[in-house]
Length: 337
Ligand SMILES: Nc1ncnc2c1ncn2[C@@H]1O[C@H](COP(=O)(O)OP(=O)(O)OP(=O)(O)O)[C@@H](O)[C@H]1O
Image (tube, rainbow, N blue to C red; front, side, top):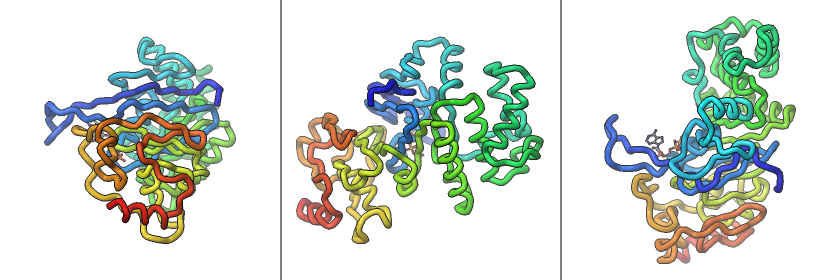
């Protein structure tokens, strides 16, 4: 795609101080390493990977909440971390909204919904006070809440209604991109589909781009145009969602997807053996090598360079065959173990 991205990450690294028992230690957590990602107008990117692989960190970098240790984050072509704080907040507020996992903690519990939704409009001085009131009414309607919700406190709403408020707040300033970090995982199973449908409707209605972080691979695949696979702080593959898992070349993407019931032929999943290494001491070379049935000394020596595939890329010295079936992969696994 040649259009300018809404957000563009170039070689972004995030390193945290490690904590143990609430105290900082001398260790470093390599939460994000060398991330390159461009979010184009109108597309949905799904981010998958096991717990702790850096999905939330990536989401926080994309919305300007996390300053990288190195690399650049450009919004609409402008490097946001070289801007003043006020200019950055304005650039972020006008282009990106974020929905967090748990609306109970993301919303100010002392404020009624009307105030929660007015807050971003007041901060950015968006229109006259009367226009802001009108926008609040419009937002409540947009997310399918009754008008009476305006006067309620978050605690007086259900979990699903609270997440609708959080989505309305994220949309208040008419962003071009919505970043949703596990937006349904704190909700009752019965309302998850409604929230996903709402996000999908809003995306289509306003032509929003969306970055969708989830543990639920089926949902990611259904909602997304492009799937980004993360492992231990690295983006190891990007592929068109419709082509995953068949065209995915990274063994980790294949293993993740093969463990999802209903996606591939119903045979044993490709085993992911061994523990996930610590993000404070990632393995040399390819981070996945300690769990990969194809790893050899090359994998220990160097991180694979990105290789183009199906409109995306993968980073692997020994990629799986495009289109290989589960059974072939399992056979490869057995032959190589
Ligand atoms: N503020 C922080 N201080 C120290 N370490 C952190 C901090 N935030 C994240 N980490 C660590 O960075 C790594 C990436 O965390 P992140 O939350 O981005 O992963 P994730 O894939 O979103 O995980 P999950 O799916 O469990 O939410 C993990 O090892 C995590 O423990």
